[in-house]
Image (cartoon, rainbow, N blue to C red; front, side, top):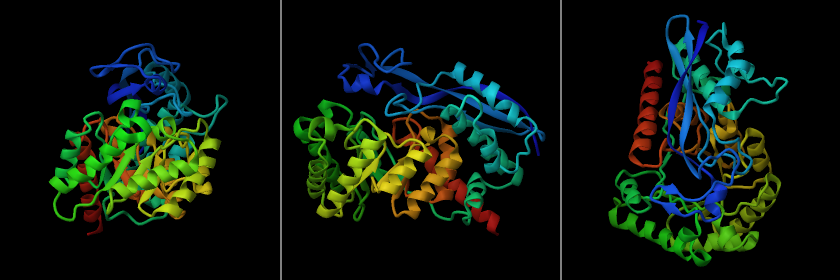
Length: 411
């Protein structure tokens, strides 16, 4: 089965692209929008609707395998690719990738990704192209072999087909209280994210954030079923560093004291400090991890900023600069690199969070489910969008369907 043609379709992301630098600088919100001028090159506004671009591989049996090219919410920050431009991405894809795809045998899948994304005179492709095209290529391989994407990827990794779901992490967005109730009622495995991305949400020396963590734990006790103990995961967007201290020992003590506020729970703190570069982040996060381990076994540091590509992730793993690494799928690019990153982290005894962004699409979210299942991620993000119900339905249902199909193939 071969690829005959390549087609494109405009697509909508499920949230926004946000200028992180402008938000950190204190741009005021007006309803959902942010006021003021953007700071990051490529942004026309501080908050823009997330746009995506679908790519369809037309196979010679008439089937079409789709993938969505899309970027992350905080594009252009912490070494990430610029904000997504559909016209520029389509032009680059037509010029540099489509000629490699036409006539390609669909079945190999992972090997096709390596061929399609080989560097040329212009260097590496935009990661959004790798991301969307790899989705389509792996879907085409699954179609050609009459199996799931998860089975294609597991085979490439030398693993048996998966037979267990991956714990799901839901995010609250700015609806930081009602969303928690929804997560508790739906017994989400990891919650609530919290979106602690401003001085007001962190508070003086973290007081507002600490109160919120206490409230989440208390709310679980009020609404949760007996024995329900989700992981408490908060993304603080560097605000421990911005609003408290950047000293690794002080950061570790802050996190350990926070864990004492919620006994009986495992606490995840994502991006406690943004040290401005990969090298400084690795050096300081390794120190935070070592200090935190000496203080408590109830808290974990999650790496995100400056931990983008497979090479970045491998550097964090080598330095043990996190307890858990977010493998942020659009930033990694090729989905096979996401699978490799997850396996590398797990082999090193480090948690592998198959993440992504609220700005993605239903198509990319479903593809990531298969990668998380195949590579045995520690947890994965409910996406797309910043709501709870939609992402849980898309990711949870895709997991259930994939595992049912795999079980049927064993009969």
